[in-house]
Image 1 (cartoon, rainbow over the protein chains, first blue to last red):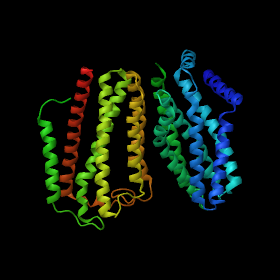
Image 2: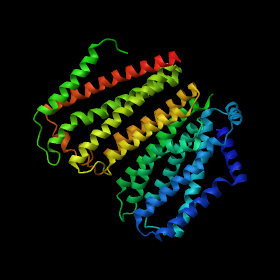
Image 3: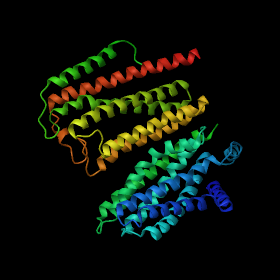
Image 4: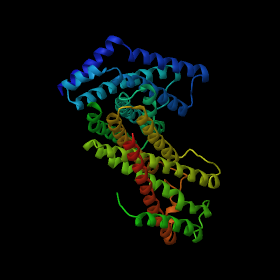
Length: 218
Length: 219
């Protein structure tokens, strides 16, 4: 537990010193949304809003998470290996990436609302789905980046491996967002889509905890 | 691996029987599908064979991670390649069928999209393997990814199409008329066909694994 805390703190300190992820990715999100606004104007159509929002957030996540294991050099990896068990390393990375992803997601949501307006979402469904989606995407991509960091050409592999892994989450997220557009959403539907997302999150985290030790040792 | 000729001949016999009988038997008359229901004997078997191959590779990947034996890595990767082959056959037979039944080779449907994305996941496995040079590392990393890919396969072909409200695909979400219409004569052809194709898939796997081992010994 203590190692996880320390490792998460270390990642945040690094981030605060370099300001690489937050600033770079925010700039990316803002410029993408601006380009969209230049091309099609303020999007009123809700389906387009949902599709654009998740696509932009997905690519932001790829940018933010892909560096999580790549930035660690071989010698630093050995240092962690002696310092902490593999499970704490992967959990700390996942926690850090989830928090980063939530911050990025909220900021891009605000930028999106400013430029594109906000459809009448049912917040009781949208916010939990959004949170679980951010956690799931960052968890899955953390694992993919751990796999990709073990091979030669990282960036390409990250995209190839990451795409199929995040598609089920993305499908459920888009469905949940569409559902939350309805005026009256039955509670059973809310429970169904939230539990679907929750289930995938749990599966991803459990698999990562079980499998990461095999990736970690040399 | 099982030795002998008998099981290979059984597999070939069952496939031959299903091809001939699949054209001969009377099929129930269903709307839209009509005579193309016979594709069940050819198209669906490909997916069963693919699923078995990917399942086999999952077993061997777990075996590799627990024991680090190179022969398990060979089996795991060869079953994935073999499964990809059957998956592509399944896509092709399905697309030809769709052209005649739906009028198009591809439609935006949960079942079809799931099949496409899980094929992509396994193609990514092949790319991942070729991008790592060191043998032990390649085996371990690809075994880890393989377990992820199988989870995706189960989600895409097992869970999501059933959750979807509507699917054009026969037997799935709100379109289950075909499976109810599957009468006894059709079952008598369908199940032997599935078993036959699975046996032949294992045969191909055996030959591929042998070839890999021979190549390794030569090098």
